[in-house]
Length: 224
Length: 402
Ligand SMILES: Nc1ncnc2c1ncn2[C@@H]1O[C@H](COP(=O)(O)OP(=O)(O)OP(=O)(O)O)[C@@H](O)[C@H]1O
Ligand SMILES: [Mg+2]
Image 1 (cartoon, rainbow over the protein chains, first blue to last red):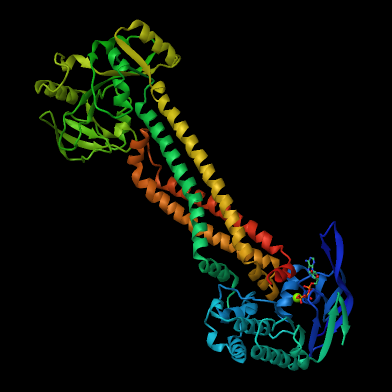
Image 2 (cartoon, chains in turn blue, purple):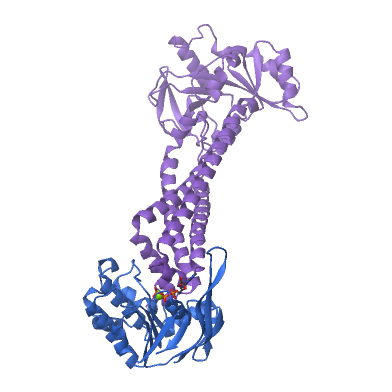
């Protein structure tokens, strides 16, 4: 399923010496093709996360629309949009993202158990944990895991629902080289299986895996 | 697989035991204060009305010294032992007055210590022919006329039907035990006129009675009067006090007005305390819930990212609030029941007021009302926090986390 943005922009109100409007993302058209790993780079503060959040249904744009298949994301009400995100999107947030009262396996299964319909595919969750090399930690609590292991848990969680689109906001930000490589390879494999993957990153390592590269600067997106 | 949201609320609470227990305690305060407060006030109310029923007369006429030396209040309201006498001719004199409806004499005697009771008990004799205050009460537990040398014991006394007690060397038989009234009347013993006269004589024989020179057949202790229809209590009262010498007519309503006054004071204090506890607990709960939710902002943002709707977050936090306040409120009620129900006598002694616990059904009803009120209030504090979290901007919080 193709994700498309048409004329999206985002402005924030910034309260510095009176109120002025700040354009975090300038009017942009964008298409995220399936089966490809698309990489988005750019300086800090250039608007990458803002853009990613708009595409993933988490942040309503000031103007423009986001389309997934034939659905217009921001025309849906919160409940519909949330369920659609739950079904179609996998999202790996920046930073730590564990639910601390649940163990690793439960964290990974959470997208499936949240609305509780049908059977959660425990086997697939295990498979993913195995793939991430943290299968033996399935029963551990998040507080017992290292930063890299937690990140891999978040990736497994993003993939467990077999999403059509995967968003990753600097998933390798605080990982060592070895873990970075594992994560990048995984995202690449995911794309190869037909998923649309959008990876926001600072790392140059990632460019080697990219099928398409975009750069954001000052809220303006350009294809490299 | 079942929905995880309910167990997620539960797991969140278990994960932070100190905070959850603190919140539960606050909820327990809520239910405890309402439950305990209403039970105490209710018990005092029914104690007062039961005292009113038992006194059951509009006017009490006693020897002048008894009224002034507050013997009367001591005996009737405080449950102390004592006795005073006046000539039995007063009964006839009073009965002949205008406006008298029902009239009956009573006889008082304090026992020396006896088998049943480590302390002396008050013995009250009544005339079965004319009595209109004690007999109806006795009828509830004993359906035959009291024979001579039979007694009926108050509920608090350690004596049982079939026991034989000895007062001043004279054996009497326990024919019945009265229902609890929660008043000083529970510690007294009741007999008919003949029996108490025998006992008074026995006390005189043993020289244990201060009234050395009385003839038991010629004395009474007090006269109870209900005014006839068409007359006001005040008129009859004034009439007696003006025209009959050496006695004092007292309006029973005035005797217990002191009690109703204290009862109102205590109800007010309990009401204010309860309100203070509620305001304080609720404010702390609101703050605690808000802190707990703020601390977990990132987690809630993650849930949003995974696809939880605002509504879903609202439910998760609200469920936390309900779980905490339900369990806390139950604890509060159980503790309230354990603290207040078994200690009715102690509370009565402390307050010096009649205290009659409401029946089981009423207590259960009060418990339910307290539970509902405190769970509603507790959940409301959870709802406030959940409303906030359900409206937050996910994108913003994801940024904040770093
Ligand atoms: N809610 C907001 N209110 C005001 N300004 C905002 C808000 N969110 C983002 N911005 C601004 O928009 C710009 C883009 O932010 P964004 O988070 O998208 O940057 P980024 O490219 O992801 O940076 P980084 O690489 O550091 O994560 C920044 O200058 C930021 O200050
Ligand atoms: Mg960013």
